[in-house]
Length: 354
Image (cartoon, rainbow, N blue to C red; front, side):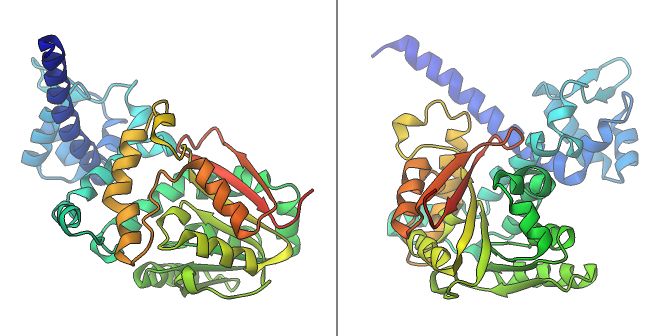
């Protein structure tokens, strides 16, 4: 045994323990708005920061101290003031958009709510259902807001040549796994001549989306509770989208087949999904690979298995995605990336070859 390697690994584990704890603190800083407020405050005491945010000072002080020793914040011991460094704010505030890493830290915290159930699955198989994740749709709606919704009309839809013009003229659109419907609502507002339908398995998410559509007065946005495994709507849609949703499905191959059948002959399927490979040895260069395999274990794979599904998982990868798209009947598949979205690929799939 190499004792030096043991010591180095021990140091890594200590760092891992501290970094994992800080992930929870970053999640709290995001949810409470502490980072957003501190980004615009001068150096301030815990009492001043608590007053500025309307939060409890004792909790704020302990949070500040944890992030100080974690080198996230700086501290003036003479003045007893804390500050968020200008160099850290662009990665920890809502103003950072898709680069706000504190947003994604919420996933780490959410895993803890189901850990005991996941451990049980290791022993007995099965899965943990969607309804066991109380904040999932809330977090994903925020994630979608910065990665999909904000870039939808200017960057994502233009990936398909001529699509924006067709949307302006008026076409039928379906969003698979729409969650709280933010993408549908954005498109319905931007393209009033087109008709948009969002489908999702979650009744709560669909109810939220329907309420939003009603409040916005959108008559061209519709939402349905739908298990896409049983979806049957032959040749009804000109465009079908799926944003980070296919790998969660119980039977993704069947869903992709249903999507292909639901498209008109000249229709297009636009799919956003994780930028990774299908084989673990090809993912060492993926900077978020450990996180992505973890989120697969703790959510994406298990919700599929909970439905008796195949448990494809987050890291199904480009190779498997292309294979399943081809087997579903898509003749032409292109993969593109966008600079703002470091986590995903964008698949453009047609029914005919060019």
